[in-house]
Image (tube, rainbow over all chains, first blue to last red; front, side, top):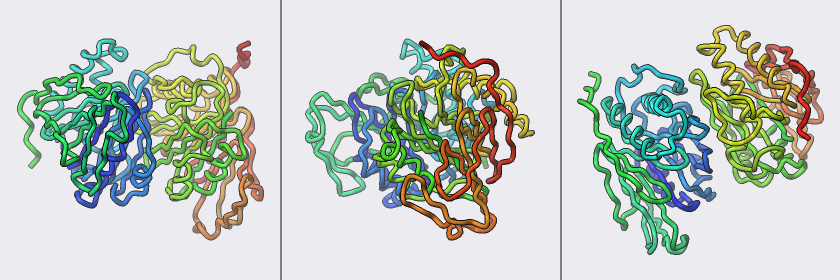
Length: 270
Length: 270
């Protein structure tokens, strides 16, 4: 299994505090030693730092912890392999272009048998079930809309719908970004918090690190953080309802959509 | 204008020596202060380090100079803006997936009026003429072949052909990678060298740095390096014939194709 981390804000914000918690789980307090990735958006574009090595020992992860890169939307993933080899091609998050913007995807869980489904114009580079699912999702969006939908609720509903449909294959917790919004689907496990004024102190669950957000923010800042498990011990996180999807824009949870499993879950392979 | 650097080898090789030369030109000895990018392949996948800041002062460039990442295929670019804003979206090299592999592209020159040409399924994320040209190239390949061609010469010829066709718009020096080969087209300026046994010493043209490749290689290593201008002073570089394209595989220049301008060059805008 893997752990997900997403951040979506109304002002460019440093993800280092939360990433430190995640990177620690990647090989020190956690078993997620099979690579990590961190995508930062700047407008419609994204850059993705990837390392097939454990985040806790990766020079790239260390670099990212030390150098602040501010962004309004970030998606991170640390991996413990269940399917596929430990290679760069299999390292989340995955990136594709659709409608002239970068789409970034990271998955937690296993979707069995999904690779038997026919692909469209998006083809996996690696051999994970996760990337296959991402390609199918984008293909569903592409065939539903000619361009990025002017009505954002149409897009949200389409994403929740295809996620429902794909989740028959297994556990499908994910974070999906398009540069405007962060879509976070809870299948079994996901938590979020929105930090806003009055800001307080927070202490990481995995390291003896605490931050007083009041010192590093302005009163109008809003920062939504989503993670597989709550990252701090002294804040109240909202747990996701299985079969639902949050949408974050400008540091707010602007929508919670139903995204239930469509039909019976397929049995695991014997 | 911009500077290009490509490396294609038969064994995973460190690009640090050549990248040091390029990064120095990015803001110290050269005027290319508007960002840089470096793509490393691992099989069919690529990771791209991008920074809209000058390479000579970028912490990411410094990180890359200090941490050896070995690869068989790399493409780098330092930018001096002629078209488009200095943003992440406009920073080369660009990446897209086609036929389940990563394609990476970096361009030197300006192709005027190309943005008036109709796009297909690949759409630029930024607003450079370069990314527009890349999208048109991939669309031409996609419509010519259903999958990655089994006969590689067919693919090479198709790339040289579409490059000819697009070069009517202006100066079209480029590096293009697909994980198997490096395609390097000279429109006005490009140079290459193949380092192989017996390896000797090389000294950078822009910094007082020299390397004895005999100390860091084995006798069967072959490393092809392509750059806008020769990077070293004590080696013999081959200059590209305007209107031709080299193809490198496993550290060899396996083919040199004609890729002349197809028809008269369009006049610059007044």
